Image (cartoon, rainbow, N blue to C red; front, side, top):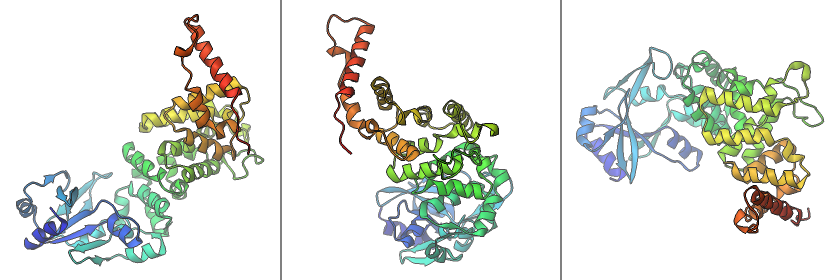
Length: 410
């Protein structure tokens, strides 16, 4: 059905329809808005079911229905209010129904920029808590004390700051800090979802810095918190400690590619420096091997995507030597490994460039060289060769291709 049909049916039942949350925020920010979430007020669930008998109920703690509107399965929720009675995001008693008001529903939301509603069909904006002004000023501010009742809201606020280029208010920072104890107990899959969204922002470092500023980095991503204070040789890293360097790298990779795996690999490339003993600083001998161990530990704690772990291990192990290789055989070996891991070649280039501020010629032209190397296979070997001899022939041909490759003049 069309949106106007949905709205007309709800209003005929004596109720009201609103678009709420992120769609309204983005509409006011004048950026493309996606995924309309609807909220109905002044209607009982039984009446709603009579109006939309084919709607699918998907909410557990409170009713959310999937209704086909304008060709999409849109979520329709009932106005509700909540009372915190336990720990975590499940510890809520929820009240919903025709007597819950729009103002009460918006009061339980996380930040003011998400506590906006647009009534249909007229398009009137309701803003009880100053969200519109906070959008204009670029501020992330909690609506109320309810913010800290779901601890993952702290991560969402940090991510919104990174996503929109907004500033966290003092109230937001205090509310985030208050989430620390419960956040440490949250299911790690909820943290992973926010990590994924944060990595896709224009400046992921804003997310991690916000967590550090509010004393939350240690309980959410301790592998990154361990990099704080790990000094580096100033001649190579004038930006500061290993945490500052990591933030610089992840932002530079993000500026170059939208590939989330590349951004994650940029984030983890120096994890091993967090294990460097104080007496060894500012040097980090063996941090590549240590970094792989830290990544495995992170994966055991959070269950990262398998392909992220595979690509991350490769980058951690190769990010230092990739910039230093000179022997053709070693270069060919590395390029073939680059081609085999689930990380785009361009992503590997972005990480090495951000880490070392330049690329060696063979990496500048890695996609073209890899393409040529992969044209060689064992079927082309002389018939007289058998077994391992074929592999040796293929490798020698690939080295010959690299030796004869004509690099572009810079």
